[in-house]
Amino acid sequence: MPDHSHFENSWGDKVRAESYSKLEFPNTYYLAYRDLPDIISRHVKGSKAVDFGCGAGRSTRFLKGLGFQVIGIDVSEDMLNRARELDVQGAYRLVKNASYSHLGVGNFDLVQSIFTFDNIPGWENRTRILSTLSDLLKPTGRMICLDSTPDLYTNEWASFTTKDFPENSSAKTGDTVRDIMNDVEDRRPIEDIFWTEEDYYTLFDMAGLEDEATYKPLGRSDEPFNWIMETKIAPWMIFVLKKKVAEKI
Image (cartoon, rainbow, N blue to C red; front, side):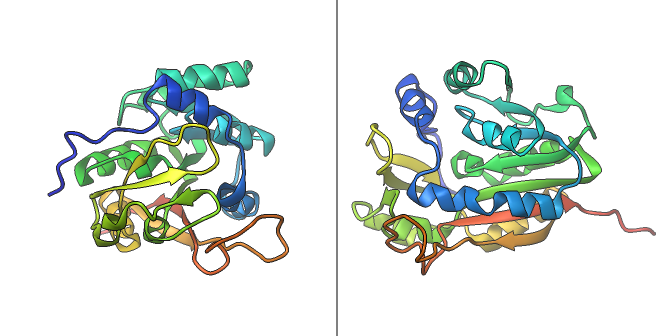
């Protein structure tokens, strides 16, 4: 079992928060958000949302732009302070892991999580967080989890470089992997938690969720970016999840 006692959530300090708060939708990040409006309109009915792991509020502002009434939640006060500065009329709440019932059980049409699980270690920890997030959903609600594909950590991208970390190639689910972001001023290596697609599905099942659809957006040649691997290999995977229906006995 991987030892995460020294794992650093890369976004847990003021310098990271300031650097990351300036990031919008450049390069590889564009692919993370490009298809979300269509995916959300296809799978989500209603307009009440929670943005889990909202950080500096980019993903929350994105949902607001789509017409959602959204609450952004995060465990980092530094990140939330930046979110509030950038969106003074937004709703941002500091939370503890797996403690969200005060937001309203069964009250939301959408729980969104963008990149958040890349920074959450441990099967038990992830399962508990997913399960308690799903409690917020209405029966017809959906959870959208967008996270890195395993390929992100072994290739070069417009927004990331991994060539200095060859050990990533032998990573297994739960291991710590590293990369460097090209789109921010803070060029310190970022630590993420590696997770295979297959093990994500196992994780969802353990949390009482089932996958309704999975998307892996690729870059297109007509887009105004200097793609490296993005047109051939997907850097992101987007899971649309719903609560499992209890079987009748």
